[in-house]
Length: 447
Image (cartoon, rainbow, N blue to C red; front, top):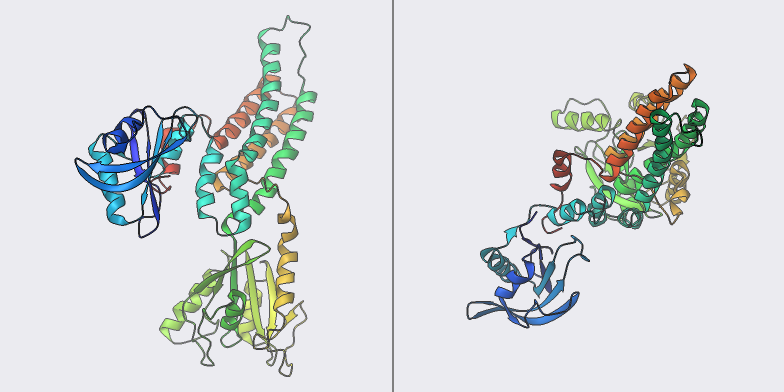
């Protein structure tokens, strides 16, 4: 961590501006070696200086150099950013000069990793930076931004402070029983405390599902037999001609993907091969893929034909999806009805744009999208974080059992420490190096 790292922080390609970033104690000196302009060691921190990048006597580019001196920087180290003209050749040449003059090429996510290791941000904030970069909807952007700003971390830290408070009292009771003026912690007190803690952790867990949906989107599967209008519905939802629409059965043989948003929430929608018995080997593979996607989906839109009675293929689809979140869309409502179904359905016509509003309203109700209108969006959204909250709740169940069995306070203390440590892991306390490396290797270089 004592060397100076450098990387290109903008997408490499043709553009107006490229940014090359350095971080480390020699950042300013290294840039000074190739900079024709003011002495960067003498400029004020957090200022921009005009000049040129040179290679010996050759001018490489006209640049603006931002100098930010430790500790008030993203990494808490000296940071320098070179703003040059966009373009692959120019940007790479400047990076090459920096590496030749003492910098090391940064690993993926190493700038953010340094910010974490130097205590500038915690693990939730670090991971949410990548979520912010990858966000595909306004809601996912807001969620990531709240995590970057530390709002979720504040909730975790508040819970840990409560646990520390009761743990410190238990420690005094055990180590210094002669201190009569110290609060004596009893099983009854711990029972009241963990009941409140359980409510807060359960709330975090319940809202984490909303966080997952906002971050990753809702996996939506369009399912039905051939020629019911699956591809037409996909095109209407996406508002583009993504899938081929044809009267020929088995036209869609592979999964077609697209996405749309409702109230700022992303829906990742899949149009699948029509479900039917077939001897065609290629079509059969498509049907099997469609069926395999059922369990992985958050929402299934089953399409049926209004002008046909239910056949064995329809009944198979209805049976296989009955325990999933499902909306039945009866297409071709403009034709004479022959369908015989008693379940709640939405009638519509993809050719006449009927039923699409009702379909989206049903989705809003099913996923309670109005709850996502809250501005705070202080949710956990990472599967590892969520698993640790679940583990905390399991430990609370153990504490409840111990209290019922009237076991000693020292037993509850051990379990409370486990919860304290697990909550600490969420924000990056006492996390081993392998876990840290695994997290940051998925970041882009230069971030």
